[in-house]
Length: 339
Image 1 (tube, rainbow, N blue to C red):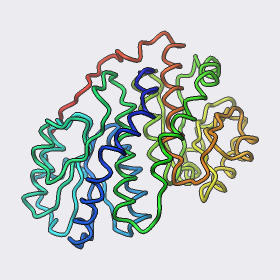
Image 2: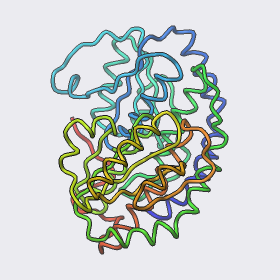
Image 3: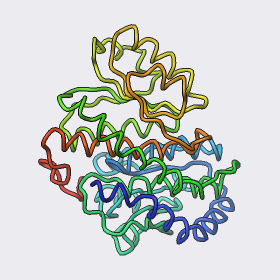
Image 4: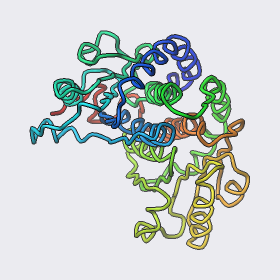
């Protein structure tokens, strides 16, 4: 897991170089098709990357984006009207049975279909109209890291190709490399959390998907019961679970979500909670019990990939501190097939 976390800047750079031209071409096709709905279908970490993709695509394109519930197709056999829809399947392996079933049905219903996967010869790649590849090489860790950020990168490339906002995608590998410089600090901080059994992870907007992803990593590699919330939702009831020294991990970038992060931190301070913030904002850092400060991120839209990297490191090192092998989590397999 640690080795694959460290590979991410190179994977991101290679993926941009190899896929940029294809994404630009696909973007032209999507614009000409007059798409009025985008549907994302995924499970696990891929679903968390898609949650990020939903925010990014809606903000930058103005097209409504839905996260598909595969059971609508696989269990309830519903027929959806998708003739002016783009349906995007997101899967590391490309072998998720339910994901591929949805793509098959969507294509039959008239949708344009696109796959984001790490496997060029996968079942998914044989179903969809177009495939965007993550150039990550084989991912051996059960806990996805480099394919998660690779999937996020493809959403950036798509948003840049079909949206109305300039995104400095070429900066992302450099920002990922800078985030890796926090490794010694993360390794030191986790010692304070080695007995953590429960926590809450909070993120909003572009980093909402990251709150789900870190919670998943903590559950699968550290056996920590981790709930995840938007900072807005957290005030609507879940705040009641917080007591003295209760651990809260916050993705708190500078930008439009900053004020809600500060409001939450002030309330957590009153409750004497323990708050670890991943941030690039000095005020958020000052209000937090502990901070992983990510340098070089000047635009909130670029924060999710460099912010998730110290979070991945946190899960990997916390697993080791707890005496758990992050590469062999109990009860889990790399490829999960459900219907």
